[in-house]
Image 1 (cartoon, one colour):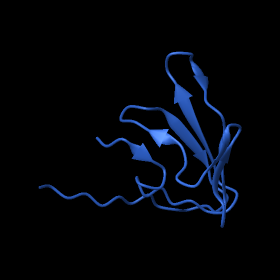
Image 2: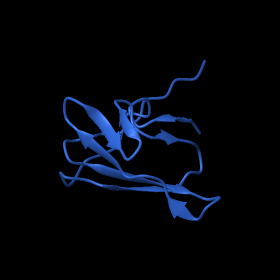
Image 3: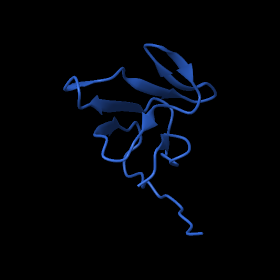
Image 4: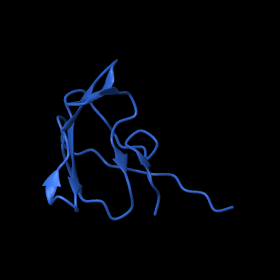
Length: 78
């Protein structure tokens, strides 16, 4: 398990994608994060080019603008 932003976790972002991260403590979703090409991730709290922080076990769903994308991550063991 790895904690990171959408960018560091290699989330395949396309222009007009949305990500919704679930907050287990409040049983609600955090701000919507929308990806805008050239700017990065935008949410109700501002612009963050790296996107939302995603921790192991965090629930989320994404609304992809382009169908059939694969989320591939690269891991290494030291």
